[in-house]
Length: 405
Ligand code: ADP
Ligand code: MG
Image (cartoon, rainbow, N blue to C red; front, side):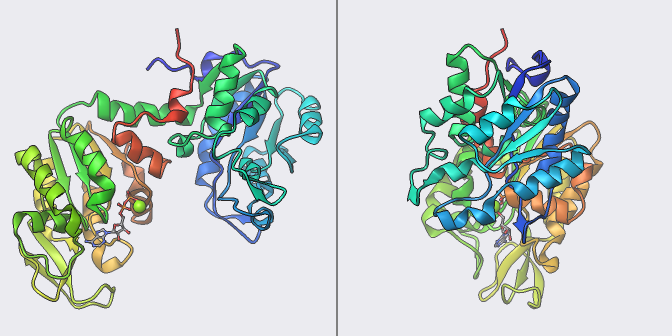
């Protein structure tokens, strides 16, 4: 990989602008799941330990009116970050103007400052102007003027072109200042990038989740790269419909049956579909269920893969050297239909010498909830960003990082 990384830079005495992903759940002024903050610590600590001044920017939620602002302040995040770092974090309740500039001027080497939610810039004097979200160049230029180097460590926003990532980066490069990736961004590029562009074979993709329509880009891109593509979850039944297999009341996207036919034709025997399903009489954990081979009976809906499918998938996966998994195998949110996802997760954890990678918002939630995340090689921190990466798209938040020469 030829991107400049934070540890390539001399940070001593430098004002280090850093875009992190602190888009965390906050309830009644308290941070809930702090995973994203924890994931940003290595880069922040690196700056502190190397005598830089860490000036942090992040968005939080969506700001559509002035009323949204108080509940989406980053102040609680500053408190949480301070606890995690074990040192004070200066929170500045604005992200533009003299108060911020003075606070930065007063920083000593090794100190940390967090500016207010970058999306406060989306609404100014009650008007929705989207300076942050639409990447107003004047905002990126202003933020860039506050520092000596810029580190992008926000993978979760890397598929978006915002003032706080692409805007700052563009202005820094124009001013001849370096733009580097943080350790989190580096790790995501390493795992997702290598898996897709330079995988060890056999390379098997497991694609599930609700809809074919969300995953067409991923299937298309991975069909050329993977040795096998395992299909599970709700999108199975659009493929069943394409093959003329009965679907009962299962989730089927009628307008995607032709697309599914094309994928089956192009993919040939690369595509592996479930051979049995856990069928239910209603979409509920209290449903009456039965395991059915092939065709789904009238009046029933398929909500998980069955035991024969688990066996089949394990056979396909057993020699894999690279596995990319996006999309749960069933409605894992209900314990009755979580077995397929759990079994595949557990099996991936037993694979020797395989790199196993999970991307996607619900998939990540599933492996964490089911307790199998620790046994896998890499759980991506970006839902939408990881999907776009798997589709082979260029992510603006990665493209804007300087190349190493
Ligand atoms: P990701 O966010 O990881 O990309 P998706 O959003 O595509 O994943 O899919 C996740 C959703 O798919 C889950 O909410 C899950 O309940 C649903 N799902 C999985 N299998 C089925 C099924 N057989 N029928 C209906 N929904 C399903
Ligand atoms: Mg999802």
